[in-house]
Image (cartoon, rainbow, N blue to C red; front, side, top):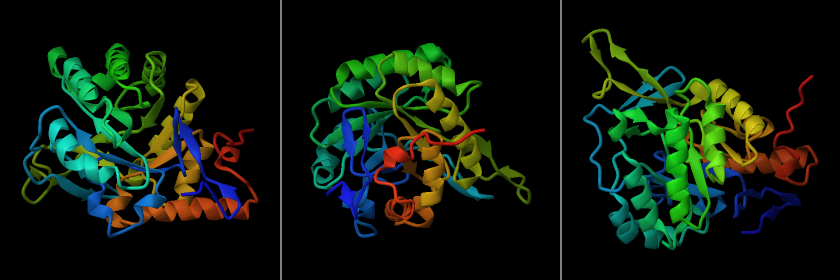
Length: 310
């Protein structure tokens, strides 16, 4: 598809990966893309990020696994997925037909798992880039999440990057004291881009039964409720690192996306909004195009990082 539509250029670059527009779908909210093929035009998306892939298949957490909250959603899916081998054998062929780049999100419980998943994905035809979920617990370090420790985050990044020729995006956890420290660590270790934020940790309680609403007790909070936090962190990280930043968190409209891009994001991911409006991502693309036309701007580069202060 032509990047230049109606005289405006929506294209952006994430490392060596060129996207027709900056709108991506967030991992875990878009399945393996086939689930949405009858609901929107997949070719119009900047990229599809598939459900997180682990080394072995995972069945996830016991139900209930999703709870609606004020202005958002709590999920405790538990990273259920088919595993890397079945992903390659069962999903790859379809994903090569989408007409837009496919980014594969990966996750592991040890450095060795991340390294092995990346090794198996190397050269797989559908994989245009890899997004590394570092919010997972390191079982060899007492369950401390990789994304909360700069050294562990750096180690994951180096190992994954060594195995792959495609761009490596590291997805940052917001559940840290200073996210810019983690962002700097992964950039120094070779990351081609960072995406943020992953979900905030939360919970909900049923006062009638006096029980947690999630089977796992705690879960990840996403949706409009986290947007101000995500926007602040994207702004801080974009000022810290020189690699592209991909904004995630409560984006439902082109206006939301533009806020993130003005704050410094090169691209954005649409997540929880997909559950409410399956066409959300495509509508954001339309909205960005309309905004550039109304503002008489020729490209997205005239928006990225152009927040005016003072």
